Length: 144
Length: 144
DNA sequence: TATATTTGCTTGCATTTTGCAAGTGCAAAT
DNA sequence: ATTTGCACTTGCAAAATGCAAGCAAATATA
Image 1: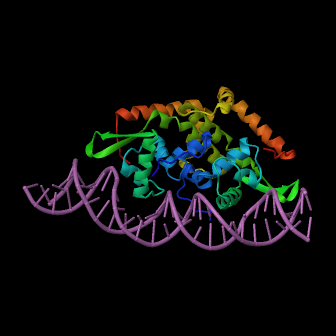
Image 2: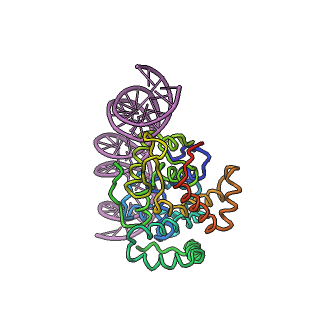
Image 3: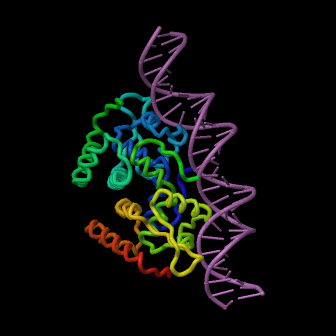
């Protein structure tokens, strides 16, 4: 299971116990930037997460209070996964990873412009994203 | 081995392919804040990394250009591991993880004061750390 | 209304990664 | 000359991951 014991008191170590695996941060990315919010949305991501792993990661993230699961307004067969405010607070971490990657690797073309914005004024960029995340709570278009 | 193929073109995914496991970021932490620089230094960290895993992670981080291995000035039996500038560039990522953790969990007492500083002026804090990392290249006291 | 499809999973099993203990070779200290 | 320290490697058990199939409830389709 994913309710593992903590390895030390170190904040980095403790954080890794929450999202330090190959998949959790990708789910968080999908929720934050990918406009994804259902199980099948996550399954369809480019990296190709296995369905059992996805289930276990969603459970873990929920247990750690990073995401929350709720009824989907469109259908009883669906569920809505959303970032909690604790999850949204990971935005700066994600942003710094993007910035690091941008500096040392080839950035996908469609992200280059966004990255320029983000680097120009991190605070502003973050606020914009957070605003979108909040408004997304009320509306819900799950079109690809 | 650790020369895994990339899962997608996504920067988050690509970054995780470099340091997205349970141990790599802890090694980077030790190099960045722990004043550690030898194999045994890393082995002795609180989390208790297994020696074979440590070896494989060091190899991976070196292959990815995050750290570099060199002769230890004190002894031919030792090696010196240091962050490259690419590795040092991960400082903002680490800092944001600390800040996130500080907000949502109990911070170890000895880090609270440091965190206050870091949050007050991130740039300044980062520059200070980087400065220390650079000067550390010339000197080298591996006392605990 | 009956059937097919979608959705969000679970289960079983093979493969891979991890963890643990022991061992190895070279350097350095005693 | 022998022991100790350092940086690993090796072998094997345990755990995590990946893959394919299955499954129940809800919804769409005929």
